[in-house]
Amino acid sequence: MLPNLQKILLKADADYADIRYEIKKETFINLDGKELSNIGSTTTDGYVVRVLKNGGFTSVSFTKIEDAEKAIATAQENAKLIGNTIPKPVKLASAPIVKETFIPVLKEDPRNISIEEKMELLRHYNNIPLAHEKIAMTNMRYFETTREKYFISSEGAEIHEDLITTGIGGNLTSKDGNLVQNIRVGAGGSDGFYTLRDLDHIFENRTKIVVDLLTAEPLKAGAYDCILNQGLAGVFAHEAFGHFSEADIVESLPAMRKKMQIGDKLGSDVLSIIDNATIPNQLGFYKYDDGGVAVREVKLLTNGVLTGRLHSRRTAVEFDEPISGHCVAEDYRYAPIIRMGTIYIEPREKTLDQLMAELGDGLYILDPKGGQTSGENFTFGAQYGYVVKNGKKDRMIRDINISGNLYQTLQDITAVGNDLKLSKTGGCGKGQTNIRSCHGAPHILVKNVVLGGI
Image (cartoon, rainbow, N blue to C red; front, side, top):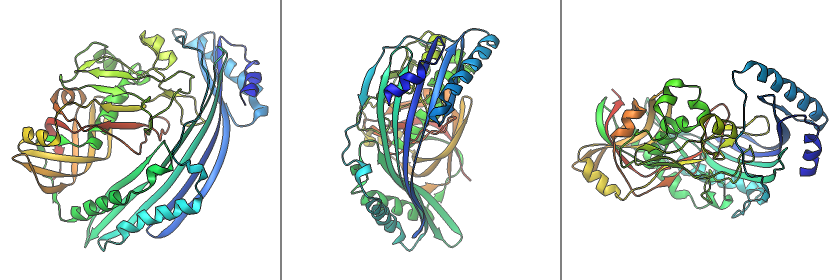
Protein backbone atom coordinates (compact mmCIF):
# COMPACT_ATOMS: atom_id res chain seq x y z
CA MET A 1 0.00 0.00 0.00
CA LEU A 2 2.77 2.48 0.85
CA PRO A 3 4.24 2.43 -2.70
CA ASN A 4 0.77 3.14 -4.11
CA LEU A 5 0.40 6.14 -1.83
CA GLN A 6 3.81 7.38 -2.94
CA LYS A 7 2.64 7.38 -6.56
CA ILE A 8 -0.44 9.41 -5.61
CA LEU A 9 1.55 11.95 -3.61
CA LEU A 10 4.00 12.53 -6.47
CA LYS A 11 1.15 14.32 -8.26
CA ALA A 12 1.03 17.03 -5.58
CA ASP A 13 2.59 20.39 -6.41
CA ALA A 14 2.89 21.80 -2.91
CA ASP A 15 5.24 23.04 -0.22
CA TYR A 16 4.18 20.02 1.83
CA ALA A 17 1.68 17.21 1.31
CA ASP A 18 0.70 13.99 3.02
CA ILE A 19 -1.82 11.24 2.45
CA ARG A 20 -3.38 8.78 4.88
CA TYR A 21 -5.17 5.64 3.79
CA GLU A 22 -7.22 3.61 6.26
CA ILE A 23 -9.14 0.37 6.34
CA LYS A 24 -11.70 0.53 9.13
CA LYS A 25 -13.39 -2.62 10.40
CA GLU A 26 -16.16 -2.61 12.99
CA THR A 27 -18.04 -5.40 14.78
CA PHE A 28 -21.03 -4.61 16.97
CA ILE A 29 -23.64 -6.49 19.01
CA ASN A 30 -26.47 -4.77 20.88
CA LEU A 31 -28.83 -6.22 23.47
CA ASP A 32 -31.91 -4.40 24.78
CA GLY A 33 -32.86 -6.49 27.76
CA LYS A 34 -32.69 -10.05 26.50
CA GLU A 35 -33.51 -9.04 22.93
CA LEU A 36 -30.81 -8.89 20.28
CA SER A 37 -31.40 -5.52 18.61
CA ASN A 38 -28.37 -5.28 16.32
CA ILE A 39 -25.46 -7.43 15.20
CA GLY A 40 -23.02 -7.15 12.34
CA SER A 41 -19.64 -6.24 10.92
CA THR A 42 -18.61 -3.58 8.43
CA THR A 43 -15.44 -2.80 6.49
CA THR A 44 -14.88 0.60 4.91
CA ASP A 45 -11.85 2.43 3.62
CA GLY A 46 -10.76 5.80 2.34
CA TYR A 47 -8.13 8.47 2.00
CA VAL A 48 -7.33 11.92 3.38
CA VAL A 49 -4.86 14.16 1.55
CA ARG A 50 -3.48 17.34 3.13
CA VAL A 51 -1.71 20.08 1.22
CA LEU A 52 0.29 23.14 2.33
CA LYS A 53 0.73 25.62 -0.51
CA ASN A 54 1.41 29.38 -0.52
CA GLY A 55 0.70 29.55 3.22
CA GLY A 56 -2.68 27.79 3.07
CA PHE A 57 -3.21 24.36 4.63
CA THR A 58 -6.23 22.24 3.72
CA SER A 59 -7.46 18.67 3.38
CA VAL A 60 -9.76 16.60 1.16
CA SER A 61 -11.11 13.13 1.88
CA PHE A 62 -12.14 10.61 -0.77
CA THR A 63 -12.93 6.89 -1.01
CA LYS A 64 -12.07 5.89 -4.58
CA ILE A 65 -8.49 5.65 -5.80
CA GLU A 66 -9.52 7.03 -9.20
CA ASP A 67 -10.50 10.28 -7.43
CA ALA A 68 -7.00 10.84 -6.06
CA GLU A 69 -5.78 13.23 -8.73
CA LYS A 70 -8.93 15.34 -8.49
CA ALA A 71 -8.71 15.39 -4.67
CA ILE A 72 -5.11 16.61 -4.78
CA ALA A 73 -5.98 19.31 -7.31
CA THR A 74 -8.89 20.45 -5.16
CA ALA A 75 -6.72 20.53 -2.04
CA GLN A 76 -4.06 22.57 -3.88
CA GLU A 77 -6.61 25.08 -5.15
CA ASN A 78 -8.25 25.42 -1.73
CA ALA A 79 -4.86 25.87 -0.07
CA LYS A 80 -3.98 28.70 -2.46
CA LEU A 81 -7.32 30.41 -1.80
CA ILE A 82 -6.88 30.09 1.96
CA GLY A 83 -3.32 31.37 1.72
CA ASN A 84 -4.60 34.51 0.00
CA THR A 85 -7.13 35.28 2.74
CA ILE A 86 -5.50 34.44 6.09
CA PRO A 87 -3.50 37.14 7.91
CA LYS A 88 -0.32 35.06 8.18
CA PRO A 89 0.82 31.94 6.36
CA VAL A 90 0.61 28.51 7.95
CA LYS A 91 3.93 26.91 8.80
CA LEU A 92 4.64 23.39 10.07
CA ALA A 93 7.18 22.62 12.77
CA SER A 94 9.94 20.26 11.77
CA ALA A 95 9.53 16.63 12.78
CA PRO A 96 11.75 13.55 12.51
CA ILE A 97 11.09 11.59 9.32
CA VAL A 98 9.83 8.18 10.40
CA LYS A 99 9.76 4.96 8.40
CA GLU A 100 8.19 2.23 10.51
CA THR A 101 5.52 -0.43 10.68
CA PHE A 102 3.98 -0.96 14.11
CA ILE A 103 1.52 -3.80 14.70
CA PRO A 104 0.58 -4.08 18.40
CA VAL A 105 1.07 -7.38 20.19
CA LEU A 106 -2.33 -8.45 21.52
CA LYS A 107 -3.34 -10.96 24.15
CA GLU A 108 -6.02 -12.72 22.12
CA ASP A 109 -6.57 -10.77 18.93
CA PRO A 110 -10.33 -10.04 18.88
CA ARG A 111 -10.31 -10.50 15.10
CA ASN A 112 -9.59 -14.20 15.73
CA ILE A 113 -12.56 -14.64 18.10
CA SER A 114 -15.83 -15.76 16.53
CA ILE A 115 -18.84 -13.47 16.68
CA GLU A 116 -20.71 -16.33 18.40
CA GLU A 117 -18.24 -16.28 21.28
CA LYS A 118 -18.46 -12.52 21.52
CA MET A 119 -22.25 -12.66 21.71
CA GLU A 120 -22.11 -15.44 24.30
CA LEU A 121 -19.85 -13.33 26.50
CA LEU A 122 -22.08 -10.27 26.10
CA ARG A 123 -25.18 -12.30 27.02
CA HIS A 124 -23.39 -13.75 30.04
CA TYR A 125 -22.61 -10.30 31.45
CA ASN A 126 -26.05 -9.00 30.50
CA ASN A 127 -27.74 -11.84 32.42
CA ILE A 128 -26.02 -10.84 35.67
CA PRO A 129 -28.11 -7.69 36.25
CA LEU A 130 -31.22 -9.17 34.63
CA ALA A 131 -31.27 -11.88 37.32
CA HIS A 132 -32.13 -9.22 39.92
CA GLU A 133 -35.83 -8.50 40.41
CA LYS A 134 -35.30 -4.74 40.70
CA ILE A 135 -33.57 -4.44 37.32
CA ALA A 136 -36.12 -3.16 34.82
CA MET A 137 -33.92 -2.95 31.71
CA THR A 138 -30.40 -3.31 30.38
CA ASN A 139 -28.89 -1.83 27.23
CA MET A 140 -25.62 -3.61 26.55
CA ARG A 141 -23.17 -3.44 23.67
CA TYR A 142 -20.10 -5.21 22.38
CA PHE A 143 -17.93 -3.18 20.01
CA GLU A 144 -14.67 -3.76 18.20
CA THR A 145 -12.93 -1.25 15.94
CA THR A 146 -9.77 -1.73 13.89
CA ARG A 147 -8.01 1.13 12.10
CA GLU A 148 -5.34 -0.11 9.71
CA LYS A 149 -3.50 3.12 8.85
CA TYR A 150 -0.93 3.97 6.19
CA PHE A 151 0.73 7.41 6.10
CA ILE A 152 3.06 8.97 3.54
CA SER A 153 4.44 12.51 3.47
CA SER A 154 6.31 14.52 0.86
CA GLU A 155 9.14 14.79 3.40
CA GLY A 156 9.70 11.04 3.22
CA ALA A 157 7.70 9.65 6.17
CA GLU A 158 6.30 6.12 5.67
CA ILE A 159 4.24 4.77 8.57
CA HIS A 160 1.92 1.80 8.96
CA GLU A 161 0.22 1.41 12.33
CA ASP A 162 -2.78 -0.66 13.43
CA LEU A 163 -5.12 0.36 16.25
CA ILE A 164 -7.48 -2.32 17.64
CA THR A 165 -10.05 -1.33 20.29
CA THR A 166 -12.61 -3.54 22.05
CA GLY A 167 -15.23 -2.95 24.71
CA ILE A 168 -18.34 -4.20 26.45
CA GLY A 169 -20.64 -1.85 28.28
CA GLY A 170 -23.95 -0.10 28.56
CA ASN A 171 -26.61 1.02 31.00
CA LEU A 172 -28.43 -0.73 33.84
CA THR A 173 -31.84 0.55 34.92
CA SER A 174 -33.48 -0.28 38.23
CA LYS A 175 -37.07 0.47 39.19
CA ASP A 176 -39.21 0.50 42.34
CA GLY A 177 -42.72 1.79 41.75
CA ASN A 178 -42.36 5.12 39.97
CA LEU A 179 -38.73 5.59 40.99
CA VAL A 180 -36.20 4.78 38.27
CA GLN A 181 -32.40 4.85 38.56
CA ASN A 182 -29.66 4.03 36.09
CA ILE A 183 -25.94 3.50 36.06
CA ARG A 184 -23.20 2.85 33.52
CA VAL A 185 -21.02 -0.21 33.29
CA GLY A 186 -18.14 -0.87 30.94
CA ALA A 187 -14.78 -2.47 30.31
CA GLY A 188 -12.38 -2.72 27.41
CA GLY A 189 -9.03 -1.65 26.07
CA SER A 190 -6.54 -1.75 23.23
CA ASP A 191 -4.40 -4.75 24.15
CA GLY A 192 -6.59 -7.72 23.27
CA PHE A 193 -9.82 -9.63 23.85
CA TYR A 194 -8.49 -11.06 27.12
CA THR A 195 -9.30 -7.76 28.85
CA LEU A 196 -13.03 -8.56 28.47
CA ARG A 197 -12.88 -11.93 30.22
CA ASP A 198 -13.57 -12.73 33.90
CA LEU A 199 -15.44 -9.50 34.64
CA ASP A 200 -18.43 -10.91 36.52
CA HIS A 201 -17.45 -8.95 39.62
CA ILE A 202 -17.76 -5.64 37.76
CA PHE A 203 -21.30 -6.36 36.55
CA GLU A 204 -22.30 -7.73 39.97
CA ASN A 205 -20.98 -4.61 41.69
CA ARG A 206 -22.70 -2.20 39.31
CA THR A 207 -25.96 -4.13 39.67
CA LYS A 208 -25.77 -3.75 43.46
CA ILE A 209 -25.10 -0.03 43.17
CA VAL A 210 -28.02 0.71 40.82
CA VAL A 211 -30.37 -1.29 43.07
CA ASP A 212 -29.07 0.48 46.19
CA LEU A 213 -29.75 3.83 44.49
CA LEU A 214 -33.47 3.10 44.80
CA THR A 215 -33.19 3.65 48.57
CA ALA A 216 -30.48 6.34 48.47
CA GLU A 217 -31.22 9.87 49.68
CA PRO A 218 -31.38 12.73 47.16
CA LEU A 219 -28.56 15.18 47.79
CA LYS A 220 -29.34 18.52 49.40
CA ALA A 221 -27.82 21.30 47.33
CA GLY A 222 -24.93 23.24 48.81
CA ALA A 223 -21.18 23.62 49.00
CA TYR A 224 -19.27 20.64 50.40
CA ASP A 225 -15.74 19.42 50.89
CA CYS A 226 -15.56 16.30 48.73
CA ILE A 227 -13.45 13.35 47.76
CA LEU A 228 -13.81 12.52 44.06
CA ASN A 229 -13.08 8.96 42.98
CA GLN A 230 -10.72 8.11 40.10
CA GLY A 231 -13.37 8.13 37.38
CA LEU A 232 -14.82 11.50 38.31
CA ALA A 233 -11.45 13.11 38.96
CA GLY A 234 -10.23 11.77 35.61
CA VAL A 235 -13.18 13.33 33.80
CA PHE A 236 -12.41 16.64 35.51
CA ALA A 237 -8.82 16.38 34.25
CA HIS A 238 -10.06 15.65 30.72
CA GLU A 239 -13.09 17.90 30.35
CA ALA A 240 -12.44 20.92 32.56
CA PHE A 241 -8.65 21.18 32.19
CA GLY A 242 -7.51 18.93 29.35
CA HIS A 243 -9.37 20.56 26.47
CA PHE A 244 -7.69 23.86 27.30
CA SER A 245 -4.36 22.09 26.99
CA GLU A 246 -5.20 21.46 23.33
CA ALA A 247 -3.53 24.29 21.45
CA ASP A 248 -6.15 24.54 18.69
CA ILE A 249 -8.84 25.35 21.26
CA VAL A 250 -6.79 27.86 23.23
CA GLU A 251 -5.57 29.73 20.13
CA SER A 252 -9.16 30.67 19.23
CA LEU A 253 -10.02 31.85 22.77
CA PRO A 254 -7.94 34.99 23.45
CA ALA A 255 -8.96 35.29 27.11
CA MET A 256 -8.13 31.65 27.82
CA ARG A 257 -4.87 31.88 25.90
CA LYS A 258 -3.86 34.87 28.03
CA LYS A 259 -4.67 32.98 31.24
CA MET A 260 -2.89 29.79 30.21
CA GLN A 261 0.68 30.90 29.56
CA ILE A 262 3.48 28.40 30.13
CA GLY A 263 4.92 29.11 33.57
CA ASP A 264 1.67 30.47 35.05
CA LYS A 265 0.65 29.18 38.47
CA LEU A 266 -2.86 27.74 37.96
CA GLY A 267 -3.34 25.05 40.61
CA SER A 268 -2.34 23.94 44.07
CA ASP A 269 1.15 22.66 44.82
CA VAL A 270 -0.06 19.05 45.09
CA LEU A 271 -1.59 18.95 41.60
CA SER A 272 0.25 17.65 38.53
CA ILE A 273 -1.44 16.56 35.28
CA ILE A 274 0.21 14.55 32.50
CA ASP A 275 -0.79 13.32 29.06
CA ASN A 276 1.12 10.14 28.22
CA ALA A 277 -0.20 8.00 25.36
CA THR A 278 3.06 6.03 25.33
CA ILE A 279 2.01 3.89 28.33
CA PRO A 280 1.73 0.34 26.88
CA ASN A 281 -1.39 -1.83 27.25
CA GLN A 282 -3.64 1.17 27.96
CA LEU A 283 -6.73 2.27 26.07
CA GLY A 284 -5.09 5.50 24.86
CA PHE A 285 -1.83 3.96 23.65
CA TYR A 286 -0.49 4.72 20.18
CA LYS A 287 2.94 5.38 18.62
CA TYR A 288 2.32 7.91 15.84
CA ASP A 289 -0.36 10.51 15.39
CA ASP A 290 -2.21 11.04 12.11
CA GLY A 291 0.27 13.73 11.10
CA GLY A 292 3.15 11.26 11.21
CA VAL A 293 4.59 12.54 14.51
CA ALA A 294 5.70 10.23 17.33
CA VAL A 295 3.61 10.82 20.45
CA ARG A 296 5.47 11.76 23.62
CA GLU A 297 4.67 12.31 27.28
CA VAL A 298 3.71 15.92 28.02
CA LYS A 299 3.74 17.29 31.57
CA LEU A 300 0.86 19.74 31.33
CA LEU A 301 0.69 20.94 34.93
CA THR A 302 3.53 20.41 37.41
CA ASN A 303 2.94 21.27 41.08
CA GLY A 304 0.24 23.66 39.95
CA VAL A 305 2.35 25.38 37.27
CA LEU A 306 1.44 25.14 33.57
CA THR A 307 4.40 23.39 31.96
CA GLY A 308 3.15 22.00 28.63
CA ARG A 309 0.54 21.91 25.90
CA LEU A 310 -0.67 19.45 23.25
CA HIS A 311 0.22 20.32 19.67
CA SER A 312 0.01 19.60 16.00
CA ARG A 313 2.90 20.66 13.77
CA ARG A 314 0.94 23.77 12.83
CA THR A 315 0.13 24.95 16.36
CA ALA A 316 3.64 24.18 17.57
CA VAL A 317 4.84 26.96 15.27
CA GLU A 318 1.98 29.26 16.28
CA PHE A 319 2.88 28.92 19.99
CA ASP A 320 6.63 28.45 19.51
CA GLU A 321 6.44 25.26 21.57
CA PRO A 322 7.57 21.64 20.95
CA ILE A 323 5.54 19.20 18.84
CA SER A 324 3.89 16.47 20.89
CA GLY A 325 2.26 13.96 18.52
CA HIS A 326 -1.36 14.67 19.49
CA CYS A 327 -2.96 15.29 16.07
CA VAL A 328 -5.53 12.50 15.73
CA ALA A 329 -8.48 11.77 13.41
CA GLU A 330 -11.57 9.66 14.05
CA ASP A 331 -10.98 7.74 10.80
CA TYR A 332 -10.41 8.16 7.06
CA ARG A 333 -13.29 10.65 6.73
CA TYR A 334 -11.50 13.36 8.72
CA ALA A 335 -8.36 15.43 8.80
CA PRO A 336 -6.66 15.12 12.20
CA ILE A 337 -7.17 17.62 15.00
CA ILE A 338 -5.44 17.97 18.37
CA ARG A 339 -6.68 15.35 20.86
CA MET A 340 -5.71 14.11 24.29
CA GLY A 341 -4.22 10.63 24.44
CA THR A 342 -4.01 9.38 28.05
CA ILE A 343 -4.51 12.31 30.41
CA TYR A 344 -4.33 11.78 34.15
CA ILE A 345 -3.66 13.41 37.50
CA GLU A 346 -0.29 12.25 38.78
CA PRO A 347 -0.61 10.21 42.01
CA ARG A 348 0.87 11.36 45.31
CA GLU A 349 1.38 9.47 48.55
CA LYS A 350 -1.93 9.47 50.46
CA THR A 351 -4.18 6.43 50.80
CA LEU A 352 -7.95 6.70 50.51
CA ASP A 353 -8.25 6.18 54.28
CA GLN A 354 -5.89 9.11 54.85
CA LEU A 355 -7.91 11.28 52.49
CA MET A 356 -11.10 10.29 54.32
CA ALA A 357 -9.55 11.20 57.66
CA GLU A 358 -8.41 14.55 56.25
CA LEU A 359 -11.90 15.17 54.87
CA GLY A 360 -13.56 14.48 58.20
CA ASP A 361 -17.15 15.47 57.34
CA GLY A 362 -18.17 15.85 53.72
CA LEU A 363 -19.09 13.80 50.69
CA TYR A 364 -17.51 10.98 48.70
CA ILE A 365 -18.61 11.38 45.06
CA LEU A 366 -18.19 8.63 42.46
CA ASP A 367 -18.21 8.16 38.68
CA PRO A 368 -19.15 10.65 35.98
CA LYS A 369 -22.60 10.99 34.46
CA GLY A 370 -22.53 13.43 31.58
CA GLY A 371 -21.56 17.07 31.73
CA GLN A 372 -20.54 20.14 29.81
CA THR A 373 -18.11 23.01 29.88
CA SER A 374 -18.63 26.66 28.99
CA GLY A 375 -15.35 28.49 28.88
CA GLU A 376 -13.68 28.15 32.25
CA ASN A 377 -16.88 26.94 33.95
CA PHE A 378 -18.04 23.33 34.07
CA THR A 379 -20.99 21.19 35.13
CA PHE A 380 -20.77 17.40 35.62
CA GLY A 381 -23.19 14.82 36.89
CA ALA A 382 -22.08 12.09 39.30
CA GLN A 383 -23.63 8.63 39.31
CA TYR A 384 -23.77 8.26 43.09
CA GLY A 385 -22.04 9.15 46.33
CA TYR A 386 -21.89 8.79 50.11
CA VAL A 387 -22.05 11.08 53.09
CA VAL A 388 -18.79 10.97 55.07
CA LYS A 389 -18.87 11.48 58.86
CA ASN A 390 -15.73 11.58 61.00
CA GLY A 391 -13.74 10.14 58.09
CA LYS A 392 -16.06 7.16 57.61
CA LYS A 393 -18.37 6.40 54.69
CA ASP A 394 -22.03 6.64 55.74
CA ARG A 395 -25.36 6.66 53.86
CA MET A 396 -25.69 6.64 50.06
CA ILE A 397 -26.80 9.73 48.10
CA ARG A 398 -28.00 10.33 44.55
CA ASP A 399 -29.11 13.08 42.14
CA ILE A 400 -25.73 14.83 42.23
CA ASN A 401 -24.54 17.63 39.95
CA ILE A 402 -21.18 19.34 40.31
CA SER A 403 -20.46 22.84 39.03
CA GLY A 404 -17.46 25.08 39.34
CA ASN A 405 -14.80 27.27 37.84
CA LEU A 406 -11.71 25.58 36.41
CA TYR A 407 -9.14 27.91 37.96
CA GLN A 408 -10.75 27.98 41.39
CA THR A 409 -11.13 24.21 41.43
CA LEU A 410 -7.47 23.70 40.45
CA GLN A 411 -6.58 25.75 43.54
CA ASP A 412 -9.11 23.94 45.76
CA ILE A 413 -7.62 20.46 45.17
CA THR A 414 -5.79 20.12 48.49
CA ALA A 415 -4.75 16.44 48.55
CA VAL A 416 -4.13 13.71 45.98
CA GLY A 417 -4.20 9.95 46.56
CA ASN A 418 -1.78 7.21 45.58
CA ASP A 419 -4.25 4.96 43.75
CA LEU A 420 -4.08 6.02 40.08
CA LYS A 421 -6.63 4.28 37.88
CA LEU A 422 -6.90 4.73 34.09
CA SER A 423 -10.19 4.33 32.25
CA LYS A 424 -10.94 1.10 30.42
CA THR A 425 -13.46 2.68 28.07
CA GLY A 426 -13.15 6.12 26.58
CA GLY A 427 -14.62 8.60 24.24
CA CYS A 428 -14.36 12.27 23.38
CA GLY A 429 -16.61 14.17 21.03
CA LYS A 430 -14.52 17.23 20.21
CA GLY A 431 -15.49 17.72 16.56
CA GLN A 432 -14.96 14.01 15.90
CA THR A 433 -15.35 10.93 18.08
CA ASN A 434 -12.20 9.47 19.62
CA ILE A 435 -13.05 6.12 21.21
CA ARG A 436 -9.49 5.70 22.53
CA SER A 437 -9.39 8.94 24.49
CA CYS A 438 -8.28 7.77 27.95
CA HIS A 439 -8.37 9.58 31.28
CA GLY A 440 -7.54 8.75 34.87
CA ALA A 441 -6.65 9.92 38.33
CA PRO A 442 -6.21 8.78 41.90
CA HIS A 443 -8.76 9.89 44.49
CA ILE A 444 -8.55 13.63 45.15
CA LEU A 445 -9.76 15.91 47.96
CA VAL A 446 -11.43 19.14 46.84
CA LYS A 447 -12.65 21.95 49.08
CA ASN A 448 -15.88 23.93 48.66
CA VAL A 449 -17.42 22.01 45.77
CA VAL A 450 -20.77 23.42 44.65
CA LEU A 451 -23.27 20.58 44.30
CA GLY A 452 -26.79 20.78 42.94
CA GLY A 453 -29.54 18.57 44.29
CA ILE A 454 -32.85 19.25 45.99
